[in-house]
Image (cartoon, rainbow, N blue to C red; front, side, top):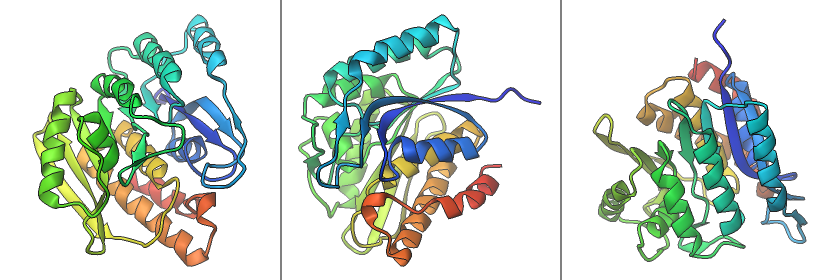
Length: 280
């Protein structure tokens, strides 16, 4: 039997609200990988809920990493998401330097903002740190706002012109990452899309699907987790993005149909058997 691959999942843990680690862990695990979480912080609920409680564990992260090094832990993939400030970014830089070996795939979701606005607790100085992480990554998955921040472009809100997105994608190539998918391309005509570029194959594509109205926290985490798992299954990057778009879109539709509180995240669990079949 082939040795099971290990994927380090570096993200926050939102106890209520299927986002970040509570999305990544089940998705990566059900695809057959050994998921190893490194929580960058613990939230009682995701931040769209009022009165959430946050526990910062930044000072313990180097101890976690040191113990993992001492026991000889290695990873086939490192996936990073939300980082709570520049201190954590420095720690994760060191993590990648220590654990990214030849053949280790690095996926960076540079979580900073959306629709022209920064997320709570994030400031524009994070773009410099995220830019470094993206420069050593094999795959980056920014939304439009994050791609703008990474390229020094003034953040803008939807709707987005397709030609503008093509220009933005061209700018992201200067970051140094060979594969990029820009998500959340709302064109204002009822469609939401994703632009994909793979320098190793020379493929550039843009895909669109019908948009479900409203905000769905955690959708980006579900998307990134599916891309990561599918890519580690050996699937072509462009196809990984298409699979992730389809899975995330269907999960959004199920959540809307169920009338679920959107702050609880996407109802993706019933769709996991379909994902297993898709990535075989």
